[in-house]
Structure formats: structure tokens, C-alpha cells
Image 1 (cartoon, rainbow, N blue to C red):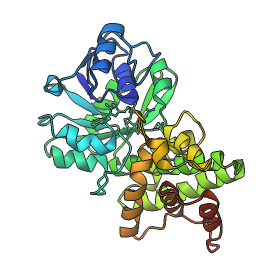
Image 2 (cartoon, rainbow, N blue to C red):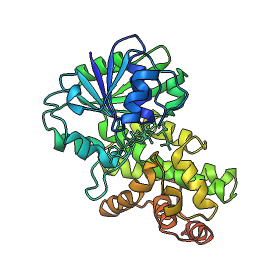
Image 3 (cartoon, helix red, strand yellow):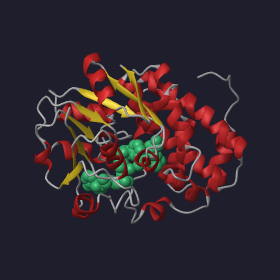
Image 4 (tube, helix red, strand yellow):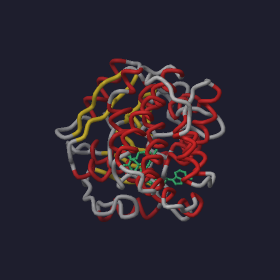
Length: 325
Ligand SMILES: NC(=O)c1ccc[n+]([C@@H]2O[C@H](COP(=O)([O-])OP(=O)(O)OC[C@H]3O[C@@H](n4cnc5c(N)ncnc54)[C@H](O)[C@@H]3O)[C@@H](O)[C@H]2O)c1
Ligand SMILES: O=P(O)(O)OC[C@H](O)CO
């Protein structure tokens, strides 16, 4: 199965490394000439994943059309750019494996839904889970959810992408796998705020648990399965991203918690903190689905500039309730 990768950020590069781990050729498309050049010349993505030595089996291109004819395409552009990037390539019936984590602003579509609209003939799969790119690129042990409604395709993809340190767990729940990854980014911002404002580890644990409850409420309302949300792509990724400054979303939250403005923190940032873009659209979609998401509401308020103390006070002053999802 010849794999093409759309997107030369940290995650696209790490996934290319996974796909090339057995020596199979992998073709990666990147927007930036510097990424294409440093991968082809030095076997390193010096812009987005510096320091990771890449397999010589990975070749990079700046021309999306070079990826036509691959057996599967890993789509790793940031969520807000997936529609535009997929609009620039004719994929026909080539399976698309969505690896971005977010919800499209303006439409409320999950990335898989965006891809299905762009290419109705292409089978859709989702790869998601607790996966810091720099760890995956180093070959550190990692496990992901590989979701696809077509069982035969899912098994082929899961087998093709699995490696000695990269375990793929099969699922048929594409929606659940996507929602876990999108929502955890918003919740990771909240956990970063707790860190930045010095609110303590009890508060962080409470946010993870209650954040997981709101992720599950939203995921189930959108047609995902609670079991998927409790797995690698949901709870697993939530725990990872809420506990490390390696997370761009968590780090953004740390800055907000220290009282810095979102605009300042996001300005001139080359890497993506998906949660900042997903939070407002998630809030709107939750309202439409009549799902209560207080942590998401709090993150939206903080991104809009509300003072941390005020937002935290409001969150804690909500009426007491039963501890259910
Ligand atoms: N980095 C990780 O550890 C990691 C792990 C799992 C999933 N993801 C997800 O993968 C996706 C890509 O993130 P990343 O970490 O690889 O990116 P990155 O932050 O390393 O790099 C930014 C990427 O955005 C692209 N980009 C910027 N403007 C663009 C535009 N106008 N059109 C198209 N592309 C544009 C750049 O080319 C680059 O590929 C995100 O959804 C992220 O949540 C990342
Ligand atoms: O750095 P973040 O916050 O985008 O998180 C990266 C991955 O999604 C972790 O699984």
C-alpha cells in the first residue's frame, strides 16, 4: 500500500516516518519549500520537527498532484485548512485517512465530514490518539485508534501503519474518534490555564474528569459511541494533552492563565494550537445540540479576554449537580 502524506507539519512528518519504518517509499506534500528541501536534502524537517532524523525512504514534494495514484492518503493539514487543501487535489476513490484534530469554523463539520463533502467517492478513515509527534518520530511506544466503517479497508490500513512501537487499534466509530481529538484540544487549554494561574493539581484532575464528561455528552449527541470516547482517541489523548507543556494547546492555556491575551499568544505562531479555533465552533455546535459544556464555555470566555479569576469563579459557582455524564 503506497502511502502519501498531505501536510508537512510535525505530525505529517512523524506519520511519514511511521509509514516508512519498514523501508517502504513514502511521498509527503508540504506547503513550505524549506520543508521540502530539508527533508529531501538532510532527511530532517527543520521547520516543524527539528532534530528528528527521518528515513531516506521519505521523499517530499511541493506539488500536490504528485500524490495522485497513491493507495491511501494521510490528511494532516490543520483542521481549518483541510477543505482548501483537499480542493486542490483529485483523489477519486483513494482512501483518505484524516489525522487532524478539530472542527471546521463556519460549518461545524468534523474533518471527516469536510473530506466526504470534498471527495464523495473517497472512503474515509480517522487516525487519532495520544501522540506527540516528536515522540512518535523517535520511535517511542505509541498507540492510536484507527477508525473506518469499511472493515476490510480498516484492517489493511491498521496493518500497514502499525510498527514495532506503533500500535493501531481498530474501531468502526469514525465520529467518536474524531470528536475525542477535537474536544481534548479545548480541554487542554483549560488545563493549561489551571497550570498558568497556579490553581493546583486537584483542579486539573477535576477538569480532566468533568471535561471528559462533557466530551462524552457532546460525542454521543453527535452520533459517536461512549466506548470510543473512553479509548485512546478520547480519554487517552485528553490525559496526554492535559498534562504536558509539550502540548501547544496546554501551553496556550498556560499563557492565558498567566493573564496574557490570546491574540498576543497566537500572533506569529508557526505551529498550530487547534483548540483555539475549535473552541468557538464547538460551543456553537454544543448549543445547537443542547449539550451543556461549561469547560468549553470557560475556554471561549478566556480566549475572548475575560479575566481568569472571574471565569474560574463562575465555573465553581454553577449549581451543584449529580456526578453523571
Ligand atoms: N504535532 C503533534 O504532535 C500532533 C499529533 C497529533 C495530531 N496533530 C494534529 O495534526 C494537525 C497538523 O498539526 P501539526 O502539528 O502537524 O502542524 P504544525 O504545527 O507542526 O505545523 C503547522 C502546519 O500548518 C500548515 N499550514 C499553515 N497554514 C496553512 C494553510 N493556509 N493551508 C494549509 N496548511 C497550512 C503548515 O504547512 C504546517 O504543516 C493538527 O490538526 C494537529 O492537531 C498534531
Ligand atoms: O500539541 P497539541 O496540543 O496539538 O497536541 C498534540 C497531539 O494532539 C497530542 O495527541
